Amino acid sequence: MPGQFDIIIIGSGAGGGTMARALAGSGARILILERGDFVPREDQNWNPSAVWKELRYRTTETWLDERGTAFRPYTHYCVGGNTKFWGTVLYRLRREDFQAVEHMDGTSPAWPIDYDTLSPYYDRAERCYNVHGEAGADPTEAPRGPYPHAAVPHAPVIAAIVEKLKQQGLHPSPLPLGLQDHCIFCNTCNSFPCKIHAKSDAEVCGIAPATAQANVTLWTNARARRLITDPSGRKIEAVEVERPGETLRVSAPLVVAACGAVNSAALLLRSANDKHPAGLANFRSLVGKRYMAHLATMMEGFHPFWPNDTVFQKTVAINDFYFEGRDTPYPLGQIQSQGRTHGVMAQTVVPAVPLWAYDAWVARGVDWLAMTEDLPREDNRVTVEPDGRIRLSYRPNNIAAHATLVNETRRILRRLGFWVVMSHSHKAKNTTHQCGTLVFGTDSRTSVLDPYCRAHDISNLFVVDASFFPSSAAVNPGLTIAAQALRVADHIIEKDLRS
Ligand SMILES: Cc1cc2nc3c(=O)[nH]c(=O)nc-3n(C[C@H](O)[C@H](O)[C@H](O)COP(=O)(O)OP(=O)(O)OC[C@H]3O[C@@H](n4cnc5c(N)ncnc54)[C@H](O)[C@@H]3O)c2cc1C
Ligand code: SF4
Image (cartoon, rainbow, N blue to C red; front, side):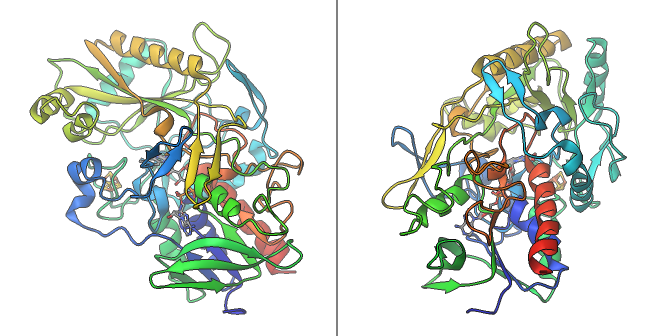
């Protein structure tokens, strides 16, 4: 269908959905290709058993790990992508995250842009995603203007914990959260889709407003199989799309890949041709490399005589160890309160324990997440098997820093009075914060994309998902993906649509 569209966006998550909204007003004729469908609004949305036991919304696709063992990745293919399931914690990177930072396990590289460059787009992204927060409360955050909405108040149990954390000399701050006004603050938010569409996800905040405009078309169940270049190899000529019962080609002068860090790298690798024998944009053999995903440990403080009646628990962060630890000059990462654990969720870890025991346990627990930056390594990478299957080779690094943060969190929780502190990690199989496979930079010898996320060697190809991250920082990635998508959209409007 040549001539029908001006821009094709592949993927409708944090990057693609935000990009669609930002470009919709330009009048350009936009086609969004999304391999999944809409998440149905149904009772199972908020059913822990459906979400955690039956994995109702998770992809059934399997990837291979570095040993060739198949696993089902923690990822979702649907309109809105993984944002449909996110915990809506929408952080800016710290100013220092844009610079090179020494860690226990090596150097976290600098970004090709600084905080001030992204700051106005963070402002816009926060408005777009209706973020609630409190400016000035977090000592690690760069000076900034007010959030679009006031911070979500802590429930009484969390408010009491916050006071005790301050008595420990810590500086707890409200988590920045993206929520719509009709949110009812339920206990099934993080990892669940919102049945009433009150979560600020990329469907609600990106795709819905974009597709309300006549110039934006969304194809669901439309998987981009390959990108096809023109004979020179310097431009994308068409996208080969698989839809139920048919495979077809669509064309547009501009193509924006936003399939998520793993799938965008896989798409470029699967698109190898005579001019790009190792895959598109891969003349330096960098595509798929430097995959990162954060080191994350779920923790729970338990006290047998302290029932926890909190419904919405995910409201506080402790960033005191973001830049250095108590006994080490190196960064450790961030501690956040988490959504309530349900007995069913805990049972997926040790299924032999009866559900009633877990339910009794989690009713007296307060949940936390300890998260540490992992560093980019060339051998942590996405590759594609001859049959097209994804192989994800990942060995976590910066492990000592994470262990120190987990110990610190345990110490804090014990000082709060919890009798027992439990911890659990998905380790290398946690793909939720995947990033860094198509790094952006000014030097085409060391990066795949330029600072506006345009492929160095393919002039009409942009990538606006988490793959451009040169480092993973230690905050949740979503707002930075959205902010950069808004920045790239402005650039496209200025440089590509107006010229
Ligand atoms: C349970 C959970 C909780 C999380 N909590 C948070 C949080 O609180 N805060 C935060 O910032 N981040 C959070 N994250 C991470 C966040 O969701 C991701 O960082 C973000 O969604 C990544 O955006 P993206 O655009 O890179 O990819 P995605 O949002 O994953 O979007 C990629 C899209 O591309 C589609 N796609 C893939 N391949 C193709 C193809 N070949 N053709 C067509 N379409 C394709 C996918 O179906 C998907 O819709 C969480 C993630 C999960 C799973
Ligand atoms: S109602 Fe609010 S807390 Fe509940 S899932 Fe929706 S956005 Fe999350």
